[in-house]
Image (cartoon, rainbow, N blue to C red; front, side, top):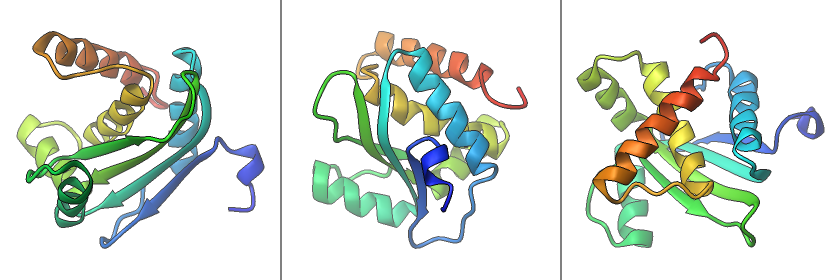
Amino acid sequence: MSEQNTLPPIDFFVEDIDFALPNPTQTADWIANVVDTEGGQLEELTYVFCSDEYLHKINLEYLDHDTYTDIITFDNSEDEEGIVGDIFISIDRVRENAQQLQVPFEQELHRVLIHGVLHLLGYPDKTEAEAQAMRQKEDQCLALRFGS
C-alpha cells in the first residue's frame, strides 16, 4: 500500500484462506470514523481473516479456550485513549452465522469487524446486559456504514 500515510492506520491480512475484503478503503474509513465518534485515538489496527481451524489454534494457545469463535481481539494499547490491536476473524464462522441469522454475509462481517473495535474502545459483553448494550452499539455503528 503506497497510500499508507493517507489511509487510516488499519491493515487487513488473510491467513490460510482465500478471501478478499470487499471495499477495504471504505471499510477502513468507516472503522476510523467509529473510533473517532467514540472518542478513541486510532493508532494501529490489524485485522487477520482466517479459517475456523486457524482461529481455534489461537484460542487454545493464547486464551486456553477449546472453542470455535468468530472473533478474537487482542488489545495492544499502552494507554486508555490509544487504539492498538490485532483482531482475528474466522470467515468460516462469519459465513455460518450470517446463514443462521439470515442476514447478508457482508452485514455480519461488518458487525464482527466493529465488535472487535468496540471491545478495544472499552465495551464489554460478558453479562447479558453488556451483550445487549454491545448489540445496540453494533447496530448504531452499522448505521454509520457506507451505503447504509
